[in-house]
Image (tube, rainbow, N blue to C red; front, top):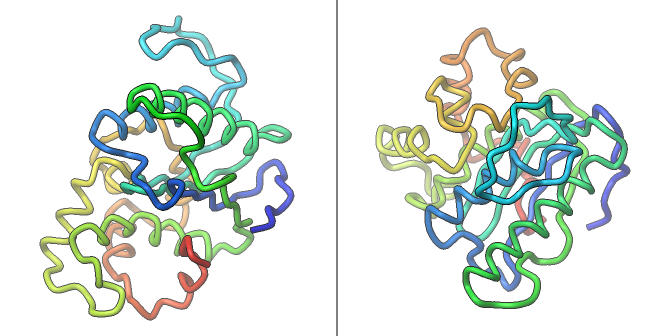
Length: 219
């Protein structure tokens, strides 16, 4: 996939998966580490050691992390670039840092991700908010693998699952504090009167939604 030019203040859908579709998150430790890296590497200053406690200095962000969702073998991000070349720089730090951690932990060598990250410019407001919903409903594949073709069999169960799925920014968007320091939620929240309205928007998901036709990793 040819990448678009990365421009400051523009928003992009960033995604990638494990090489040979392998799992890139094996347990909670891996998920926590990647989310830690989303925060730690989003700074123009060099990252410190994982266990290092930094002094309370002002951070200079490279990107705004608007949404994220981590799945066993892939991830989705919505990022807004803040500095020149910010997204490529951030993704290089994220890819390198997490791969080094994962390879050391699993005693493996080589690439962890399937080539370079994929990127799509998000230039339309409707596309933007629907994309956030697509990303936040990704975890449904874990408990309802065929939900896009067969529908949801138990909405109460699936809603509860989404709200409690920790490896996503969705809990923070509906007022359940999870990893609030990682994301800038203002850009999505401005389209909704309150957190309840965003939750309703996500719950209104429809398998025939035209806005998600080109959002899969296979596109």
